[in-house]
Image (cartoon, rainbow, N blue to C red; front, side, top):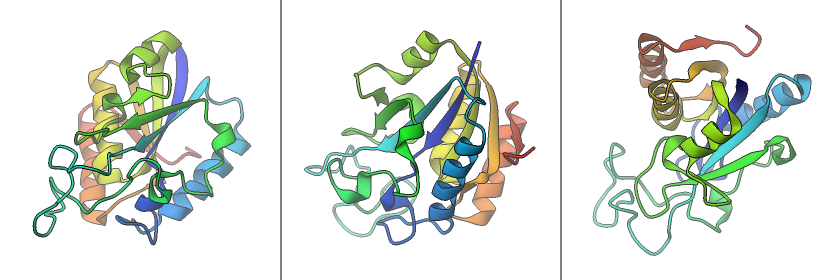
Length: 194
């Protein structure tokens, strides 16, 4: 019965100045690092995801190639594997991360559950291997990938808490709605200090 922290998509392209920069993204990166340093024994494993898209295609329609993106199902090119935008934000101390997951390799992907580890293991299998029954979720963006990851964790039978002071939303309204959705699905939402 292990407890994991899921760090969702704290990448340069999702923080201020990136292709899909979210206000407060850099502060989330800093906050996660501070939180993990202050609580080194709170988690059995720390797992971080990154969007890791292919640069030579539209990634299953995820990238808008003709016309403007609709910001619902199609997006500007972002987090292309091997580019600075796909790398973790520098304020996130990657030495504190035990397992790295890549998602969206050629297809749209929002949830960490759609990814694979650097060793090629499907994320749900990795959770089972590690015996993870409880997850806390932090990262970017509350209303997209954090939401999808938390809901998939609940669907997979894990106890889920979103640490709402360590997330950043694209839109404050849809971010708040996402947190309510997680609670309605059986998850918890509270600050990291709570």
